[in-house]
Length: 413
Image (cartoon, rainbow, N blue to C red; front, top):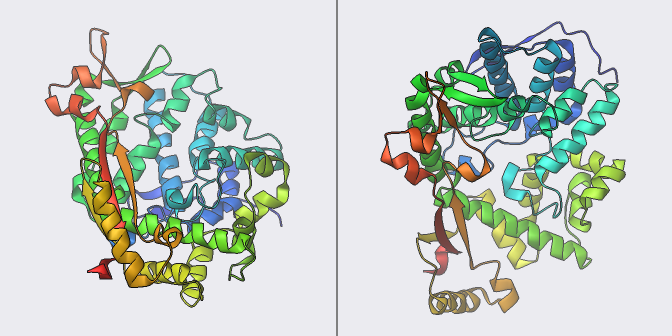
């Protein structure tokens, strides 16, 4: 297969931004590569479409959009006098284009279910190393920017920070496809306000209100979309389906799975397996949402009542009831529910853990401990957004919000 094809079509018609121009043939050839094309088969928001039916967009959409935004940002910085070479521009585009290439099926939902060790960022880096060899070292600058090893650190900030092209795109895109207007941000305005001071990305003071809106929108999207309680119930059920399937497979039980999925049900691969065994990465490259959905449809008919019930709950949207609160649940209350579940479904204590489960979820709308959004004033003063903003709620948004939740079958009542 010849991957180095002539770039005759350089435009994508994106529903969010309109026409997106692909900057050069290397980028085009990376997009055409089977590793990247796999992202067409992985939904950006996992099971969120069970709550917001329009949320069917993919990691492919998002990666192309983020690449578009980083191109706009670099153009703005160049106009303001920053010296950024064509090789660095291409490298930044590659870094953001491939930043999610390591995602597995259903994105974050199954990140630690199918593969226990490496994160999707780890796998993305492994993919990039493989592609760098395949493309004769042309991804080297992109790799350095992705790993924050390139001398110009602000380029990495455009790829991964509290205000990066990744977040700007997913907020705008996810808001568009879910129809949740509270998540709408003015990405164009934010990008036009970017500047670099002492090799760090800053935002000119006249863009402060756009940043405030960005942070508030991010908080609203997390609790209204990403951490919506029904979405959580669906995602945790899916994680337990895979946990049960892996247990059955390890015990020698016959279980339907595609070739790619079967490999990950029967083995627990480490990051070293991904790095050193080409077959592991090859199997992972064949794994997408369709493998999981096909398996779920078959598992509905499996004799194991746990696997069957959980699979049916997802495929036919018979989702678990979920209670969410600011404090932990009373252990006695949980035991009462478990007792009812065991009696109703005639299951063991171990099996009951698949039907009744609790966890906690937390979110920072803005976490200055892992990177700041700095505001640049005309006199040269730089302040963190939580200090610069005259909105009290911005400083509040820099604190973690934690919620406890409990899930169990709805038909228990």
